[in-house]
Amino acid sequence: MGHITTSKTKPFKPIILSCFCMVILALSLIISLRECKAQVIIGNSSITEDCISKNTLSAIFGMRLHTWPDGTSIKVFVLQDKHPLHIKFAKRRLNIFPHQLRWCWDRLVFSGTGQAPTELSSEDEMRKKVASVPGAIGYLEGPVNDKHIKTFQIK
Image 1 (spheres, rainbow, N blue to C red):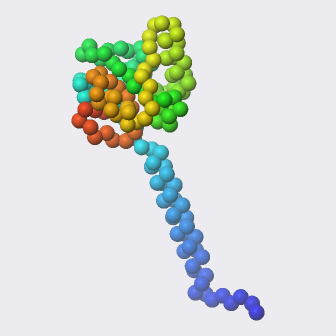
Image 2: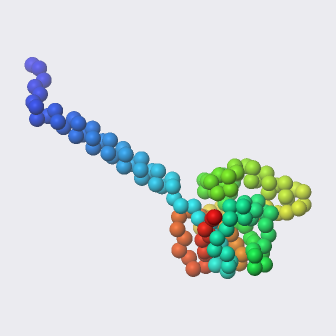
Image 3: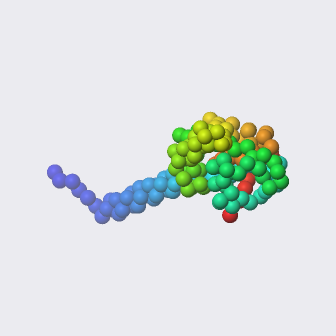
């Protein structure tokens, strides 16, 4: 005996296919939104600056700028070289690869003309250090709700 089909079962295939496509699109949107979390530059609340230029940001993380305009020493905190947030920060905010940034820091250290930033192992440690050290600067993902930490606008 052959397979019997009725006109009532045919419309279900396009509906199922449409639902499947919508689920795939929704999942891809969720994944892309997770990847696009806002990356924020954070600083200790004692810092008087609210806005930093891209050049100033590069000078700070390149360890070429040592004091804030009010004279406070800048203390730079970064995550480990292989940390995904550090890689995104270096590429997106500083327009440099993490290994190039490391090379700059090593050159300063080995030539005796400067020092590397303090390297931290987690975002939680970054949050705690920046909140507790006057003049500190670092970076995190997502909004930061801490009265001891300010976020900088980059112009």
